[in-house]
Amino acid sequence: MIICDLCKRDPVANEKNEALKNQPWGIIMTPPLGSGRPEMRLCWRCTQAVFQTWMMSGYLEDLKPKPE
Image 1 (cartoon, rainbow, N blue to C red):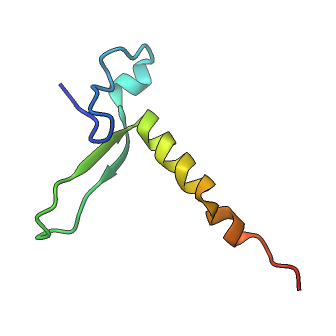
Image 2 (image 1 turned 30 degrees about the horizontal axis):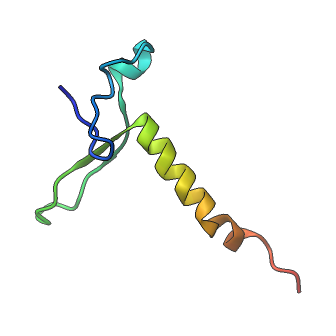
């Protein structure tokens, strides 16, 4: 069984899409060697949620050109 580190669900348990069953991970975060931190794996749903949160956090507002 494979478990997503964020939602703690098995991403292939109820998935109907064969492509997502073969490649269930959206993001795999590997820490630097020797850091002692574990690798994190996020399913595609959690990856989309993290990306959406990041994009809506105001980061895009900082990228817009400022009027002079």
